[in-house]
Length: 132
Image 1 (cartoon, rainbow, N blue to C red):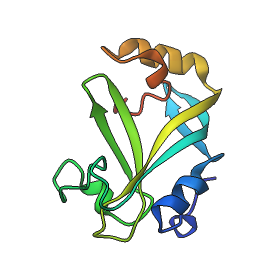
Image 2 (tube, rainbow, N blue to C red; image 1 turned 120 degrees about the vertical axis):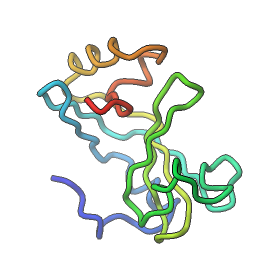
Image 3 (cartoon, rainbow, N blue to C red; image 1 turned 180 degrees about the vertical axis):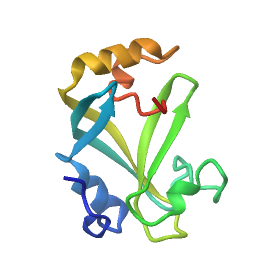
């Protein structure tokens, strides 16, 4: 069952802790791909490593939405990373989903990552960067 947005904490550190153990689920090639979130990283307001640090841009605008919105970006041209916005609307901060424990749809995950060019296999299990 999807988490209701009202259940999502409006605090970067609280959200990073809250997401641990939650399941990330995606329909991938007609099958369910699912993994348990086992590692997160909080990118706070004022952190130069946060993509929101220099202000809102068309690329990072999801980080400025209310807590619970996805922000996906290509890192160093090789891996797509998934973040979740974590503060009130207008405040840029987020939580990076650093690691998942694959639970189901592993064959679909493997096939999907073979389609992707230049990405490390371990970074691509849920294929979050593609529209397909």
